[in-house]
Length: 263
Image (cartoon, rainbow, N blue to C red; front, side, top):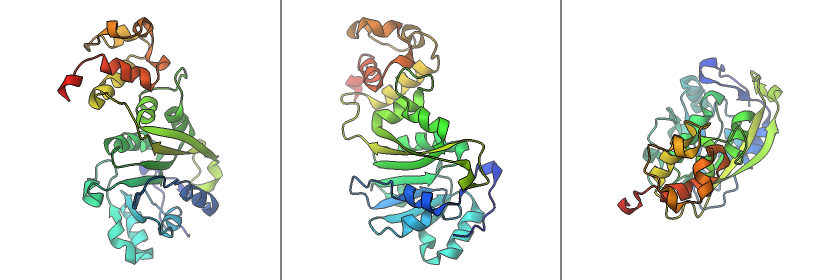
């Protein structure tokens, strides 16, 4: 599909130009649950959109903050005018599009807001069973990182708490316009059927964020402002640093921090 939209540095746009990679990304949706909608974040020039639109197993929607891209897209697909949203994924009320129905999220995500996109996904985690996205390689590997890795952090724990994360393939800079100065990676995140059993989820978020805000400190210091009942936990936890603990460990700390009786 020809490109008629100018990439804007302020929006972090790098438009994919290789249809084979776009097709591969579209085919990476496992569609493992019976969702009927797919939301593409930042369709841009429609390189990925054309393959998503042609798949009749779900209904495509797009959202783009770039009004030039929206206008161009509607000119190419006038019948999809009502499915192409001029708006910001980070702020748009997605319930206005899908009510309470589940929907997948896919896109060649702008690198400057890809982490924010993931936090937005977490806000709608009960409705989003699957995510397929192109990320800057370093961000993708951070999301997929296991404990003990220096890149392991808040986003790693929170995404892995609710999703199984798979690194699918890497993409070279020359297939974008303009070419980014970084490598790119496509991830698939599939919602876990059983996540954080018996755990207060808002408190879990607080525990994880508080621990990593002082990631070089031992947990007894970084979590000193929370009422953690350390005597209910393995003795090693108190002297550990957050990057050494997995999702189950943070869930155990959350359950030992109280507030569960408020649920």
